[in-house]
Length: 570
Ligand code: ADP
Image (tube, rainbow, N blue to C red; front, side, top):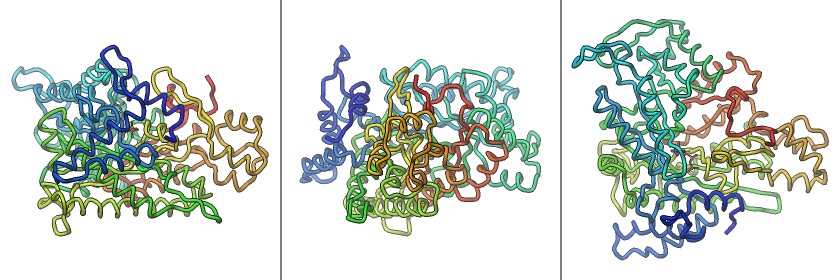
């Protein structure tokens, strides 16, 4: 199995099945057999004569070769009593005490099983409005987010990871200004990523420097107006200061809502890549692009045939997951099975470019993103159509935006996940992000540091005859090759890191992937510490113009505790 020592350490610490005394009761190889067998078993549901063992072998091979990995909960829980296999959930939060605390309870059950939850708080009446039954005063969305946060804090997921949440508020909610800065001066919302739900009419008002209405969700009536540019500037300033809030373009999420008759999409999962209906869940999986290169006498090229085979097996795998999944609530099971959304994406994209000798921040790099994701999306949809012929379309197909075409098994097929853990397991760059740094320290979990050096660069420098320990030390310290002497120009141009890539290229790359992705793209636009607010504003406007579904930015050094640190060995 081509799995690194780092990856083994992560699997052993967090993913292996354990007995009551906390001792592992399986090996890493046993884990992959457990997952492959449990997921393949779904074949028999559709065809009693199915060769389940052959499917299990194909799934096992695809995972142990690191060609494809399913999201963490599938690796942790498949074939085990908990059996909860999805990473992404969205829960509704309606405007009553009972509904709010139901959502908190349901989120706790999901966190316990390793999933992340997204919520829109836009339906909650604003701070200061009256409460009919008591004559008291409502405390508003932000104060309830603190309760969700505290519950999350208390529930450590299966003893491994702390829960993750997305909190969304529409830009026309009367409490929007409180929401924009709600994480800045408190540690009471640390288990949330927050995003403002932006509408096109708001963006249009920003463009013409107009006013827009704030609407009380409880009454549907206007409570006043704000100047759109002031709100936009407040979002930009807060994001510049702390990285949050992100923004989400709600109209775009709903333009791609596969089954509009089921209601509006109001929220995504915690990292923003998976818009979902209330009570819907989705399981993700990512193809390791580095493993889909082949070496020719002229250098590396994409192995199109292998990529297409992996896509088909991966869609089969993810559709099976929906079948064998044990859902945390009956309603989540019903909603999920009605649309059968899956999220197939890629990881190791930046590493793939290094092998191909193409800079991330180049038209050629962006063109390759389109080419690869077009394949994943097109072949993924074909695979889902073939499954529909054997297993039937998703139950709400006849109400879906696809109803006039050939039946589909899954209402969505593609999503670009962050692959935070999966990319460590596969030993490749995460998702579609550029390489963060070529030598750095990664804080994987509380107080665990892994030292990573980029093997592709090391090999390239050795081949060019310029490798030395002193050179590598400079790269560790500077986190970039840009100003290190003694590196041939053609290597320097290709081996760009996240901070060498200008924010504009980050957005162009995100937009290229979004063009061929049913759901959304997890991507952070990195800024240097010296970036101005106007540069952040420009990126937000560009993300809107280029068709992204949202944006998350991060200015280096703007938060004291970073997951990834450049050039710092501690
Ligand atoms: P992995 O690599 O572990 O499979 P990703 O980094 O790709 O996970 O994240 C995918 C999704 O999984 C996130 O958007 C979120 O919905 C969920 N997720 C990630 N980390 C957590 C966490 N600590 N707690 C709960 N859910 C999480």
